[in-house]
Length: 294
Image (cartoon, rainbow, N blue to C red):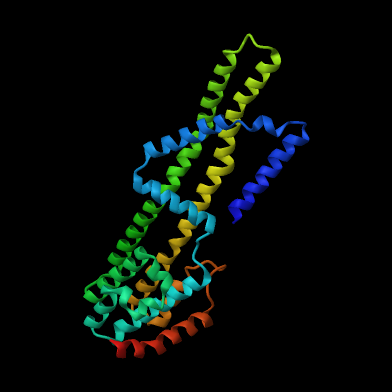
């Protein structure tokens, strides 16, 4: 939503200022200049990136428009899930724990956290390290290093789309110059025409430079920046899981372990202690039901 509002503000100020100076908006409307610029940018984007990155870039743009960052309730769900799993480690057998993490989509524990279950990467991250935990002989410092390496790998993969979009944005001003040069070439072909005709052709050519700079710094770059911010914020859920598990491995009880995870959340989204406690009490009450169903 903020992207749309920002673009509208930009267009109003830019076009309004141009008209206030006596300019005619119709002069800026040069469809074929835009076709050259945007088409060339799209072509270079396709050349430079794999199909996987291209699709991920589309998904990232949608996430940026939707501002798809973890919400307050998402953090509560993750903390409640971690509490339930850590409590299960202390009270259930290894076989019962494996049943929970081998098929999370069929587990009542995970279905109570739909946000986590909807994110396959996050679900796999939790299940993989819970599996390492119950296998025994896991050294905390080794698990911590492994977690940090995996989170960094996930971050690298998720920011490929951002880097691809940023590269296109950086190249748009130069592509705009290409369109302008083509327009000037066309104008030079009509050098024998009257100054009025020649002036219109040169003005149309200069629109290419304007459009390249505008699309680069007013559209593509801001969207890429928003995409990066959204995806980096989504990685905070992994950090919450990491800190909770490490605290638990170091001997903390589940209630204290999830407090370690809660403290890694920004103040703006961090759930209160009472709210987390209420969520964990609900998870505790649901545990006997899950056990009887099993």
